[in-house]
Amino acid sequence: MKKMLIAIFIIAIINLCVTLYLSISRFSVEVNSYNKSDTAINHVRIDSIQLVITERESIVYKLKEHEKDIEDKVISLNDSATLELFKKLVSE
Image 1: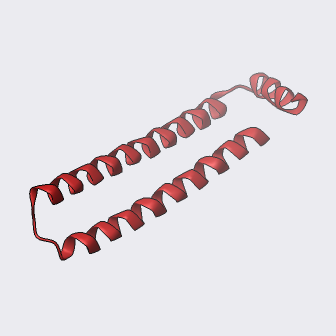
Image 2: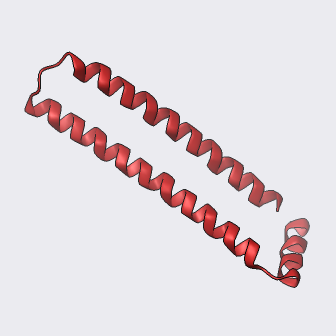
């Protein structure tokens, strides 16, 4: 249980860091692209940034889905399986 809480806490911290990074990078892209003319190079840069953002959002989505799957598995366990997992966590 303690390890699961630590894992969830770490995932939450990673999620917060990714969200902050993406917010800052989106803001800087808007500021930098505001004064520049539209050229092919700028479009390629914007497209590559959007691709990176999409990839990172998909990673965050996958982490959230994995966390949700773990929670669903834990909730669906019966009492004896829960007790066995608890004993295993305590013994480690």
